[in-house]
Each structure stands twice: as structure tokens, then as C-alpha cells.
Amino acid sequence: MNTRMRRAAFAVAAGAMAVSLAACGSAKESGDKADSPKSSAPKGDDITVGLLLPENQTARYEKFDKPIIEKQISQLTNGKGKVEYLNAKQDATLQSQQIDTMITKKVDVLILDAVDFKAVAQGVKKAKEAGIPVVAYDRLAEGPIAAYTSFDNEEVGKTQGEALLKALGGKAKSGKVVMMNGSVTDPNAAQFKKGAHEVLDGKVNVGKEYDTKEWKPENANANMEGAISALGKDKIVGVYSANDGMAGGIITALKGAGIKTLPPVTGQDAELAGVQRIIAGEQYMSVFKSYPQEAETVAKMAVSIAKTGKIDSSLNTSTVDSGTEKGIPSVIVPVVSLTKDNVSDTVVKQGYYTVGEICTAKYKAACAKIGLK
Image (cartoon, rainbow, N blue to C red; front, side, top):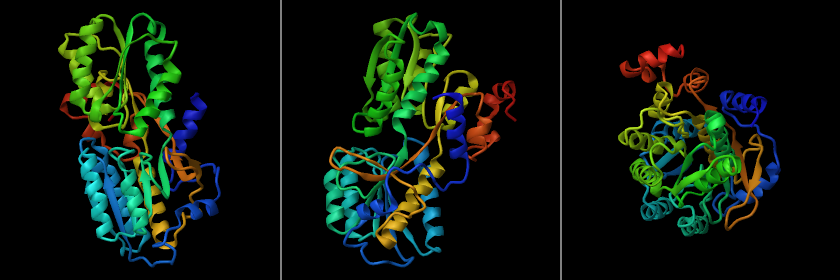
């Protein structure tokens, strides 16, 4: 993505949270897709929205997604709408049981961020049969999904790959790059991986590549230790890490191997610890994604579908295909490469963290060095 495109993407992400992206499908088409027996008759503000999030190890879900969705649903229903919330804690079987719980509670619409996008398909089907439309959030689940919102996941991978190439400069082929992809149960991970490979293939030498079980930092740490042992600590010039949590485990392994000058390591999610590592020079970059924009979008989708059976016409939609469905109405939110050069203009400006939260005693000197105060 060139500089002008990045600037344009950030302008959208940092502006008003309502989404108005270029449309590839009409609002009428979106409404047709979202129709269900339960939502065929208009409802008032007294609705119940089920919210199923996949895990609580990544800071974003409890810090951003859940509270923003709850607040937006309240605002859109004049304080009358209720949210039934459950977290699957990275357990696909538990999430299937949670879908059953939401069906038993007769929620009006279900927002679902899947642990395993394939395993959840049967639950999505059961919900639809019960007259409960399902809106896929952040990860495109299989099954009869009514609507979907997320980020441009291939663009995330490309953004990470481009940043890594920039950091490597003329050293891109002087050694080996380790690729630490996400979990195979997450469809987003495959898209991040695809985008990264489109940028990196032929320009770097990939020495080791892993699909990291459950996105867990400890699994990334173990994989990285294996890569260091196999390749040699002096041969690794860069690490593609699909998110910040794994980057933390990777950097711990690099330090543990006695590597003094750390190779550039990518990330994603702009987690506080990741931002602090970026400021300290331990992690090269992360991907800043406007979770408020994504969360407000899914809340607006869900409330509109629950009340009218259609997606709000102000949400200009495109369409995506899953492994089981074609033409799912979707809204895609842009992303921004986060480095030490734009911490102030991204996570601080959008209220993710205060300077005080970032610049603790351990990081005060590093913050002062980049003028963050």
C-alpha cells in the first residue's frame, strides 16, 4: 500500500465511527440476505442481542469489543436493548454449547466471533432454523451467516510484509526469515498468511514457517526456540509474527537465545505490551485496527437486522463468500501500519491508551526519545 493509500485508510479509521465504504452490493440485497422467520415482522427497541466472543487472552476483546458493542446497542435501542454475553475462552466445543444457550434464551440476533470457523457451522444452522440471524464478527464463520464485518485481512498480511521488507532493507536476503502464522482454525489467519506471502515471496528466504496452535504466545515461543535451534541465532534476519501476543513470545525466545540486537518482528492488534515493545525498539511494528469502528458497525448491523430483518441502508456493503455461502453482505474496515513514528496519531489519538499507560517508568526514556509525552 503506498503512502497516499495509507493516509486515506487512516483518515477513514480515525474519523467518525459510522462506516461509509464503497459499495459493491445494494442495501436491498443485504436486506434480502438477512431476512429470517423471526425478523420478518418489525420489532421495537426491546430486543436481546447475543454476543459470543472467542477468547480472553488477547486484550482487545474485553477492553474494546465487548464494552463498545454493549454501549452502541444501548444507544441504538434507547437503552432498552439487552446483551447476553459469553466468551468461549478458545474452546470450540464450549462455543457450540454457548450457541445452544443463546437459542434457548431466544435472543433476537446473534453476533458471533468464531473460535473455529468450520466447527461452528452447525451451530449457525441451528440458530437460523430457530429464527435467529447470525452476524459474523471479525472472523467469517461458515454456515448460513446473515452478515459479516471485519478488516481487510489480506491487506493486514500485506501491511505486515511490507513493513518487514522496509525494516530489512538491503539485508532482506542476507539470512533467514521465520514466519509465525496464526491458528489454522481461524480463517483470518489464512488470509493474513496469504497477504504476507504475496509481499515476501521471492524477496526473502523463509527458513522456518509455523501455524501457531490457538495463537498462544507460549506456542509461538516454543516454535521460535525450535527455529533458532534449527537455523542458528546468527542466521535469522527477521520474523513475521501474525499478532502482538505471539510477537511477545517470539521476542522472549530471541532474548533467551542471547541475541543482543533483535531482528525486526512484526505484529498486529496494537496491544499495550506490543506498543511498549515498539517504543522500546524490541518489536518493529504492529497493525492498528479501529476496533471501535468495527464494533460499532457490527452493533448497527445486528440491531437493524433484529428490528427490521434488513441491514441499515447507511452501511454500504460489499459481499464476501465463505466456504458454504455466497454473497454474504459485508462491511470491511481499513487498517494502518503502526510504528514508533505514529503511536501518537493512532492509539493515543483514538483513545486506546493514554500516554501515561504507555509511558510507565520502564518506558519513560524511550517515550521521551520519540517525543511521546
